[in-house]
Length: 273
Image 1: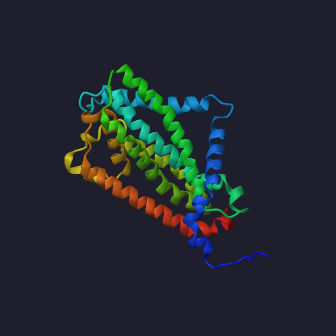
Image 2: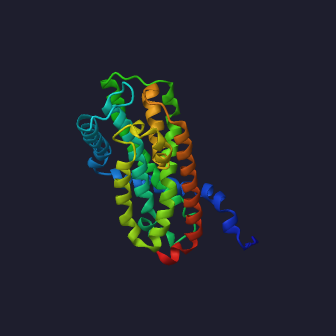
Image 3: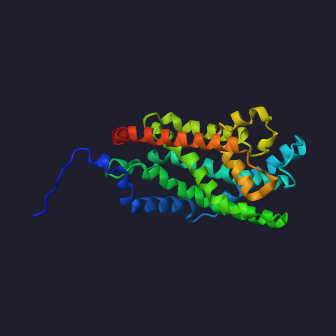
């Protein structure tokens, strides 16, 4: 006869091991999100291409033709902008999806135990797929401008991970707050829209005066965007390493805060949702 042992605090102690044990649930949730987004629709795939492409055109006209801002080195301005649109789109999509993930999956939370961290983490897969689709445009632009990448391109996966981590930290915190305070769902579109213009997407971060560049790098996406441009454009767009290290520290801080606040509020989700 099998014995069932109830051990106090067992769930808490085995939380991170349970995330690995429930990895199939992560795959199921990620696949469901992808299916819902792209099933029986063309605009879902086209939107992942058109949105960053049209934004790139607008920013190129405004910042290059009207404001006369310089590009990085000899790189085409449109290519410089699109190299920044990729990580920004990845970050903004991942943040938006993860921030609403608990509310969108409220039917699961009250029925069965599993680490709730799986839900917002699974939404990152859809954002990453959109990124891969948009990356096709970058390849076409590099062929059009006859701009060959260097060995720096091999480091791009590391900056992709950084962009996802930069979105996951705030996303975890906001999705936890969203369970208790539903008004937070209206804040995210504003934050994403505002962040697009204060981040170096439509312009090079080198136009920021030298004495302000380190302070400007408190925006974690500054380091990520500069890293993307460095990987894609090479020596034409060198990384400002003090600013990158500061952005990396801010990403780490927000990730720690996001996870800690999410874990602290996790036990109340089923009662509040």
